[in-house]
Image (tube, rainbow, N blue to C red; front, top):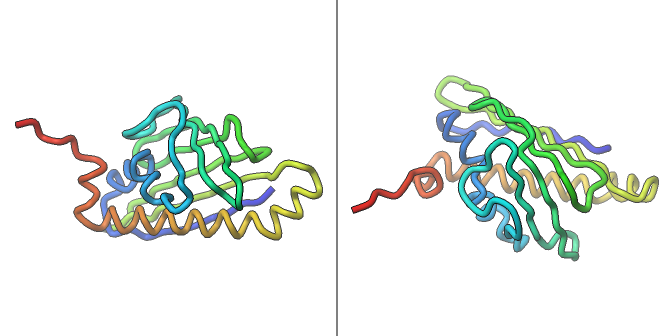
Length: 162
């Protein structure tokens, strides 16, 4: 099993960072380079406790599907999503949010296990772990950029009706 832990300091309120991190629309924008799109389940907005979403994306040369559920949520400090069905043998992603003065420290703990026994573990260590780390870092950089600009309003504010 591989475990990736990332820390990202973001100059924005914790509640904003928390909600941006569970925004399905922002998720699609930050991983657009993979062609990731929602193919089933909740289609937009903020993923809530117990809801499921199925993603389809190109990863490592193949189109993959991953169905996840929001398995735990403690607003605004923690949520967890888990794989229900997909290419991994197991996948769990914890998202932690701590206030740090006027900043938010966002911590990701991403655990996964490749299928196919010893061969899968070799692939996991040699290729998959580095690939997933790069993907998560890129996503976190996108969350940081959006949260620290006025662009966050595009994902979290309800449009005014005239």
